[in-house]
Length: 241
Image (cartoon, rainbow, N blue to C red):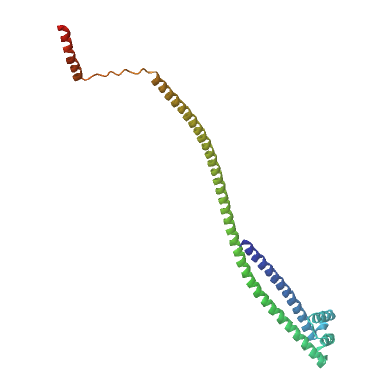
């Protein structure tokens, strides 16, 4: 967008400078035509004798009319027609003078119209140039704001990257600590299992070495009484004998 606005400003500025150059050229042409008109009017009225060198005026007029593509017959008649006094000119001389004067007037009107057209074009181009410059200024402002926003975003991104790196380093450190604690936990678990196995083995050995207690079985009282009664007769018999 900024490049387009810049291109528009450059294009309008270039065209504006061309119109300004044309205006200057038109002004110079107008001055030349006016000077030739003054010389023509002076010679037309027969005041050439009052001028120090009327031949130079005639020479300049011939050169001028040749540039604006005047008829060759008029160019040929110009030195004689304007070199004579007004009352000494022939009908052809008078006709030639009138035609040449008419060409001068038309040229003056033409250059005046070109100046008016050029001034209008300059005014229009100046407005376009102003609009383009305002658009370019606005685009530059937006570009500057965008650049500032970009720098701010980059700075924020840089800070976030630094924070992320710091946190990643902290995570790595935590991972090392977790691995160290995990390794220590495994070692303790191995030690605990070994201790439990040793304790179980010790308990088993103690159980093997302990004496087995004797079991006393008591007979029922009724059975003991029967046995006593059966034993009595035998005793009596033994006593009688």
